[in-house]
Length: 310
Image 1: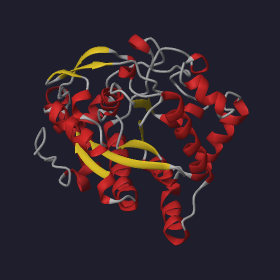
Image 2 (image 1 turned 30 degrees about the horizontal axis):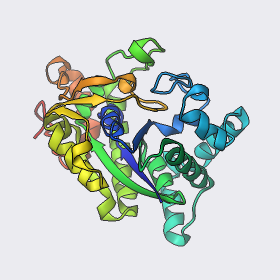
Image 3 (image 1 turned 120 degrees about the vertical axis):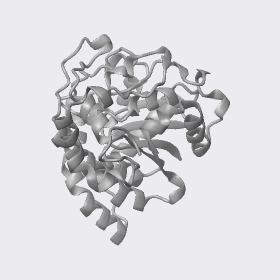
């Protein structure tokens, strides 16, 4: 059985640094946002986190070769199945079909084969997938031969919204295409949608022992104990976590398909809470980011009338 840690939640919530840290453990591979592997418009330009193009990467060249997925037709078929079966608007229907008769979409069968090939060629006991969308997480849950654990990582919607106003570029060293900014109001509407669907469908589908929620703020305020808690949950030995101090890790090269530009980082990396938004975000943008997210802010411990967390 291939074990997958699927990280769910909204973007700019610390999923890449979480994946890179866990992916630096022997026997764990971080693949980033796996859905971009067959996307025709991957803004990462088909560049692996290790720095090599997919076709030349020591991992992806073997995985794609085994799946006969180096051809554009094969990748186009996988992309079509994802678009047709498991976009977020399809999630209520897929969930109802699963509850009614255990139906498994074709895309789940495909992605299950991908995970098994990754585990084989990476010699991995755990695959970390930071795709984040609950619909992809549900497809992973249904994938044959896969045991999925879901870590629901949440971040203050104002912090996520502020992060999306800062200019970032894809590629190592910020050398690639500019990442499109998102307005705070739209960002928080999506924050609410993604987190709500994760709670409503993905959490309900999984056994309680394989679903965990964690806040970015708690993870980064006290990183070593937080990662030890995740390691215990996944059955990973705590003493192989890549910590050199209580808040610094040594990051190994990753094999991420897509993600935040820090997916290319390696070596000594400090894990620290990014709270720039508290002082730098305008009051108007703060309220624009707060209002759509109100239904879930209290549930996650975020005080809507003050800057920061409750």
